Image 1 (cartoon, helix red, strand yellow):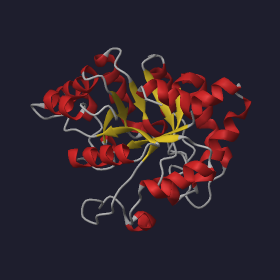
Image 2 (tube, rainbow, N blue to C red):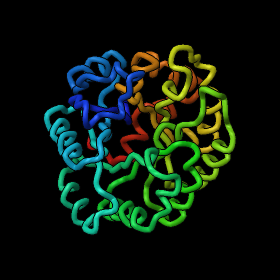
Image 3 (cartoon, rainbow, N blue to C red):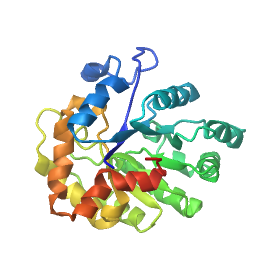
Length: 276
């Protein structure tokens, strides 16, 4: 089962989606399942995981509705207010849908110590108690707080989105690499091989720009705790869908057939508990 483990859908709203700046103007339109389904089919993908892009429970319900209507959307990573006094009840209510497989907050927009806050830790722990995973969306500079969070949460399943956004454009490896290796020492922490092209030079990236970063995560996490994600449609700022697939497929060409199958779907099925 080939799965794109990270993509987004939205009806564009200029107020809600103010994060889409002028240089990202190509994203100022609707991106919905019909368009993605054609891209998945052309790339020999069987399905995808839809991930939140807006910080609202309305967004979570929107994605769950799309997943109910489109069989190829195998699971949803939604949003909940982690700091709400009734976060446990909110998570439980949303988790009534079997298609909800995880939660995420846009931590990259928060203070660097956000994940060290007790109320945030409590909220993420509630996500785990409900049987859901948690996607960690951070910049590389926020990785020390992720390490603190992992120590507090024990064995709760976490996955780092977009390799924690290393500075590929400037070729900066440290201290990102050391932090990722430290995270990988925890067997409950996984990593998404996604989002690389938009951390590189949008109009001049080369596959070899990604290699040092892929070397680190493949060595640290191993092929059984990595999963491919396109980050569509955000990836379109720097690459087409086929180009994003090819960067990872080319790098992984030396893996065994079983390891490649894991990277391109089987690992996502295991991590998210997808019903395929």
